[in-house]
Length: 118
Image (cartoon, rainbow, N blue to C red; front, side, top):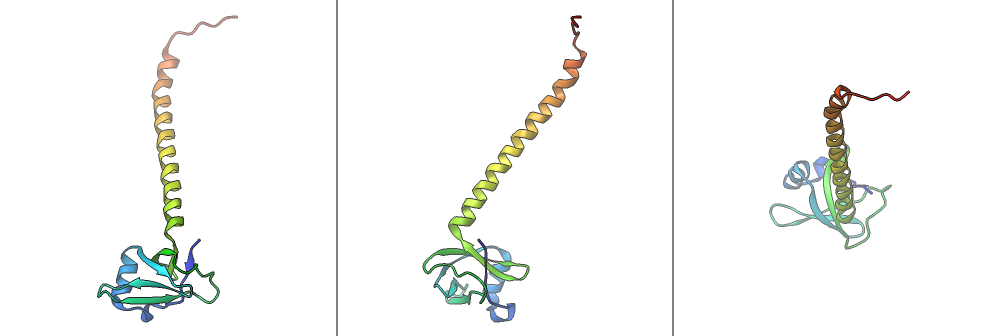
């Protein structure tokens, strides 16, 4: 479950903002905020939005920039969702390969002589 963080781009140090826009950053929940590490080695806390459900204290989260601002989600949930998505992707690839094989075999089946029993 994604959780919105209460922060505007002007509230974040440039190093944190750049990292969030480039990729996901790992942080840890303090119960009231998410603590992320800046490139200079300092910690920066980003508070949870007032209407958001806070992530329990001590949970490792991914933080990234979404359309409306920074969001976070527990690492375990994101990794599990990506694993499910990867599994579905493999199943779709397998189904496409099976369909392509069947399309190649169809003309051969129709070209073969048929016995029609009346």
